[in-house]
Length: 223
Image (cartoon, rainbow, N blue to C red; front, side, top):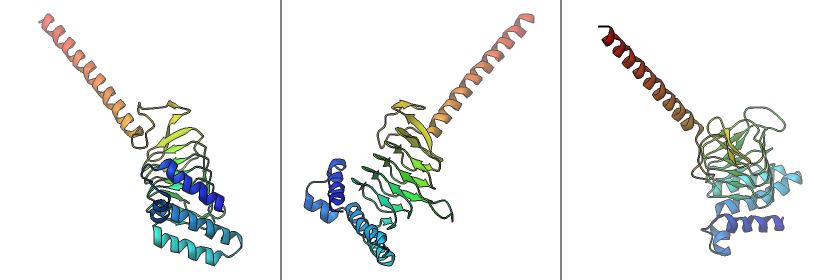
């Protein structure tokens, strides 16, 4: 557990340029507080001390605004940036070096039993406000854009945006749009569709205007 907590602390310095010192990180980073308390609660859960584990998780929720069920399995190097409103369900599985931003939900879709929460691979980034719902698999090196709602499995090495989530970049090649993979500058498939529709309408209007002009010229010649 101590090795995992050390990896979580290292992840803060690797991914947050605002982190200045170890003391500051230990005292002020709510995401780190939440994951440390989860490590303890998860250990207790595995020892069949589920009530004590839930009490710790609820205290962590009260203290940090981050709700992680003790049953969730989380790998090393886990980082929650800011973190307020993050919810991670009981059967969620999270790989190594995963980053979540504020408002992210790894939740279920109903009252189903058994595995009902997502499985995230390694090196996954889930941006602010995104919702990943159901027993689906998110592959390694996936980026999920802010506000996206992901309901279907996502292959590795892709970027997903929109509601519902659509794959817009795969293996480094853009499927639609011409925007780089910056966290705050991801492609928008809805905007892309509207742009295509607007271009199509302009072409049809030009054709209609040309037809009207030709008809008028032909009519003038006959007269």
